[in-house]
Image 1 (cartoon, rainbow, N blue to C red):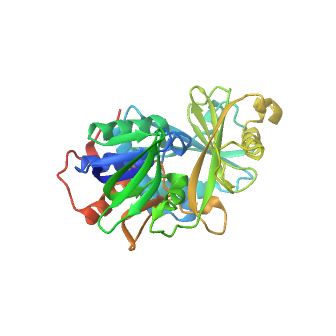
Image 2 (image 1 turned 90 degrees about the horizontal axis):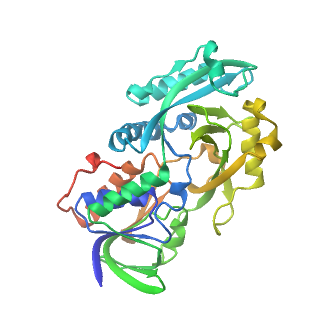
Image 3 (image 1 turned 90 degrees about the vertical axis):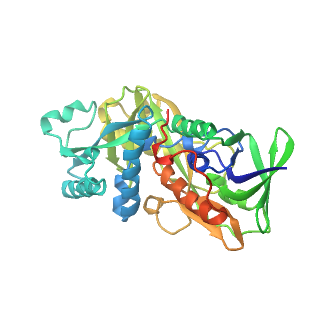
Length: 391
């Protein structure tokens, strides 16, 4: 039977980052992905590497600071995959967030970035407002411009996996974990590949299965408690409308949420929604309510480009990602977005990840590495994780 230091379950951005970080630290790593790498949530995000300006509203300052530091790091480590891009926030006479509130938020955002060059923001003079093609100017009081970054989430995840493989990680796709036997000193992980049953012994297991984190835990023997979660679907629409040069940060006309209108492959991408799902079955599909919600907000700000039905005819694609949020009362918009790492004394060799963000996958990986070192000891490092370039 094969023996490794670490088995990672899940080939999304968090699983990929953990495999890369642990391999760089000298651990033998096997990653099991039941589908294809970056085939689910990590290919269906809003494709942003950002601090999360909106998280300031719910007081998640440590997350924003961490995210802004990771934005800076990824711009340096993955210059061909992560690119700075201007964001614009229009403030209207009837906006819920006043010009003062936006300016205060952007000032705090700059401070939390340690006054990085991308932390700069400005008020755009009214003479230049018309440069944002199609944006409604009636009632517009102010327009602010700041910076964040954009990426191809799937390509970024694949680049991390490529780097992990170069460091010695073994990655198996279409490998479904069927059982985890947690023993006193290690785990036996059973998995299915091409109708064949395989098993591997591992000193430690990290469950980074994303929306399926509790499904994996249900295969653990002896049984282990799971965390109460909700699946929240984020949907996007791609419109056959030439893109603006930057990203619009728009307040919803229906509720207190914000959405982004982004350039993507020369067209216009709108997202995201937050729809709580009752179950996970099959490939996530955008709902008619989500389509109406996104098009309604877009039409509110870009009414000159046509009514809802005209916009509906210009929808050329849609995609959905499912993220895990802690089960709490209140709106999903206000829920904490940091990663919860759960290990139980009864199962000390198993760590499960709940939630997380594309932007902060590297900090999640280094935190998991700390757990790994404490659990099974250190190894002779092969590379410095903080200097590994991605391409």
